[in-house]
Amino acid sequence: MSLVASFEIEYLQYLGPDGRLVREDLPEFARDRRNLVELFKQMLYVRTFDTKSVALQRTGKLGTYASCLGHEAAHIGIGSAMQYDDVFAPSYREYGAQIVRGVKPRDILMYWGGDERGNDFSGPPHDYPWCVPIATQCLHAAGAALAFKLRGEPRVAVTCVGDGGSSKTDTYAAINSAGAYALPFVLCIVNNQWAISVPRKSQTGAKTLAQKGLAGGLDCVQVDGNDIIAVRAAMDHALKRARNGHGGSVLELVTYRLSDHTTADDARRYREDAEVKAAWEREPMSRLRTFLISEGVWSETEEAAWKEECGRKVDEEVNAYLETKVQPVEAMFDYLYAELPADLQAQREDAIKWEGR
Image (cartoon, rainbow, N blue to C red):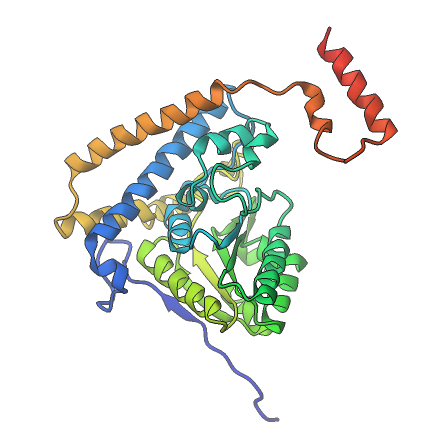
């Protein structure tokens, strides 16, 4: 028997959980500590928004909401690396990446408040709307990447999927297409360890999730998803090679879902307290904060001031959402067909009668 193929998966990390550098060859953007301060401020803004959103749901001012607590480094690293003309196909949790790309928090709140106008982004209009069906956004991104290649455009399609979604056939089909046609495609597998209540070990036998891209011929790396430097560096590399015609990549961003899956979930039913406690010791905000303070470029005073500013900015977005006039019930029928079928027309008329009671 002869060996026809072998592979290795590299692991990328710059900043350890204790806030100390584990390697000195920092990427260029990280050598200027001011860039890291800005990334930290964006992460803190997203966490402030996320906390407020959960509170809105608990007080009946928002529908079911999917928190992104613990994903801040992954999301900000993805969004900050992309160019405006690139296309982003998110799942339903990548708020940080979207906010960095110009989506207003009020849009996010409107969507989770049950109003589809939230998908009419104030940010890049060419980005895809949130995708609740698991992993289908991967195919959308692969299709966009194919269009970019056929047109000869220097644009990249970026998409995110969870650890559970990485086992869906949609993900594998997107990987296969991206590899077969050398598409400008970047798949970020946000491995937060839990596919709702199913642990990672119970839904795949792969040693890493990054290796799932190897069969398709993509460049694959596992990244410390709680290390903003590593995430941004991995994204910069993947985007550059894709833009230069060298094909797609799979980035496995290893992080942890510190919250419940959504506000309709209670993760205490299936997760051990000790596991969550250990995850908090590895979370992205504290390690970057420790590093920046040790470098003398950030302080507790500056953080307190920025938290206050974040609270003010988020409150403005919340008020804009709450003041938005609610659409009439029959509006749910208005954007489905060019000509509404007779049965749905009848339902629309019933909805108008019901609303007028």
